[in-house]
Length: 452
Image 1 (tube, one colour):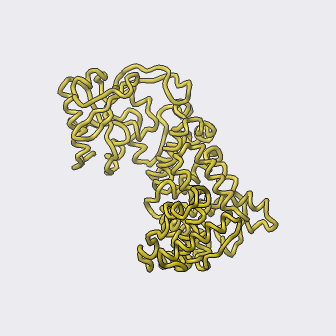
Image 2: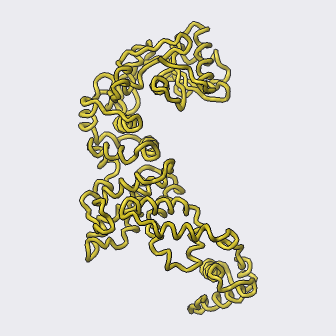
Image 3: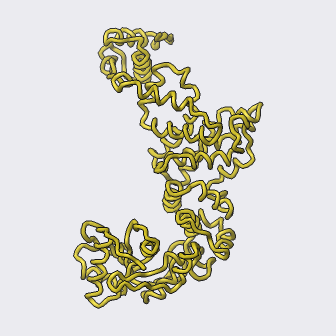
């Protein structure tokens, strides 16, 4: 029994269905929204399947456009919201493991049989309130099972990303994967990464920022898929750590625990940094005299994270932030020894809040000591913004006025003057200009001058 939700998105979708009905077409809510409605949950969006062809849909809705004519897919804007309206279709071929080689229009029953999992292949008519289930989706929903529609190997060969989607749905819904579907996933696991980087990235975003991301990665590991998606994580298995700091186990276990300890709603940058923060340890242990010292593992981890970001084709901005977090994840350990200027610069970093949460999760996933985390956050809370980041006393224009040409010298001098200001060694513009002049002269003559 489905209750109609008091949701403007649902009301807009129902209006589209009613208009299609009024023109003599069959129209149904389809897929994940039906699954969620049956579970009493609020769907994120409402997709509509219909017997109407794209030209007929466009004729009925002024604000519509065809986004996949060969697949019979239109987008209809209703009450300021976009809804996907797709003609019932059958598909065949899939020689590229993603797109069908052929498509023809059909009825609702055949359309259901091309879909991925039974719980995602049901239809509901919000006008007549009739549920159409041709594949046993209701029973699997009651049994809390993820089952491929039809023959599992065929479904996964049609679209390789379904291998990872099976894991995401199982973990998100708290369901088990049906044994036959599970065997097919394990046998076809290498195909999981034979999709476009953009599609893989989007699926991993949903997993790592969704419900129980560590559980999803464990399930991927059980199915033999994780080594293809995150090979660096699997390589961390068996890399031992000092038991006094890491009673939880090896680097693999610690990485998943760190991900688990992130706060609800952690973003993708933070989640991927948590996953990679210690993955430089296996290589570092081979390089060091003591296998448990892991020298420079943060730099090695940042390199591995950068390679993963390239594989997934993340934006430069995201990749830089993720690598910065990995490289700095040990930073709080030395906070009590830091100069005032170093702490102030850290507080001003755009990624400071993410870094703090990474350190907290890292500590909770190991020895559980939050002293450094609490110290740094208390220092930040006790420092007013005008103290933490006062206006600069000297600019590049000042150096030009002093007669120094633009170049690498500018950044070096300005940074040293800024550090002196943040440390309290210079307190006025006059003192800052005098220091800048001395530093610039020393740099030009190959000398150095302290700022204490």
